[in-house]
Image 1 (cartoon, rainbow, N blue to C red):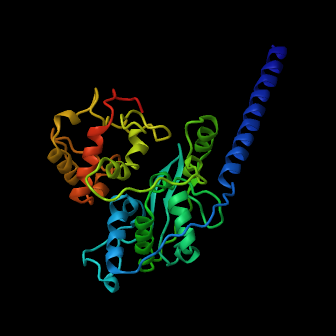
Image 2 (image 1 turned 90 degrees about the horizontal axis):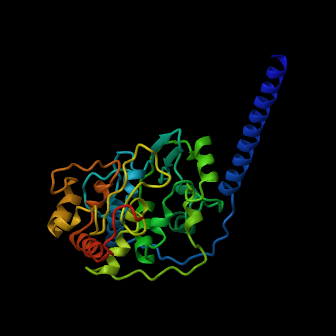
Image 3 (image 1 turned 180 degrees about the vertical axis):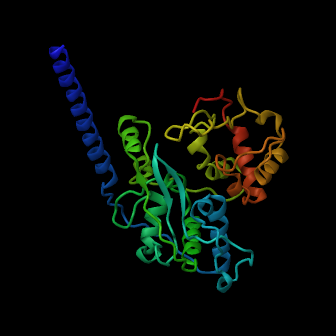
Length: 320
């Protein structure tokens, strides 16, 4: 019995030691990625100040989902910019997600108030943060979905930055985004998963030229890059890599098997995005499908998106 207990203790100690060493390795590997320095070239983007451009920036900020993350539910003082007088949410930031399986997803306070980042950001820093997911210190931002905004035209990006810079200061101190131990383990051991979007961007490769606005397939694709985060590059849906297990799989947005879209009309699609209710009467949960942001798209934009989805190869559900 003593011999058995002795060997059991040795085996247990060895296992504990292995786990400790593995966790230390995982920590330092993930930390090296989190502190990696990206030396990006400067980009020339004109930042306008005229009311029409600020209104355009507001429009993009809303339908691209920036408002949904960074709004704290207050109001933004835009009276001095002659923008529409509706009660607009502030940019005071938000604890978007706090899940031990991943970590804390914090949407920063974008204003110049206490706890805000605006005083630390020059125009070039805004460009690098939004388009590349990189901080002013050249390290990557956690969770910031720059892969969706990398393709923004210079005109659209400039309008968004101008709108952000118009925000009145709001005092709102927040913690910084962080990965939990589980999040670090997943990101290290599962090659298909990263919580550092900057790792997915070919920063040195010339970006594709953004299309002109219009009801065209090219413009529809330009408007749907954010959709591909959940629905996959092919838009055929399926389980979403790296998302919490509680999240439902994304539906098929092609017209292939397993999709409801073949029975929809363009009007059905527009009404679904505007109201969050499908033609079948199903209410879409906004925490999973951000129709509350997409509803701000204008008719031309939604028609372009519908035309683009109709043009996609008809794939069976789940072929992300």
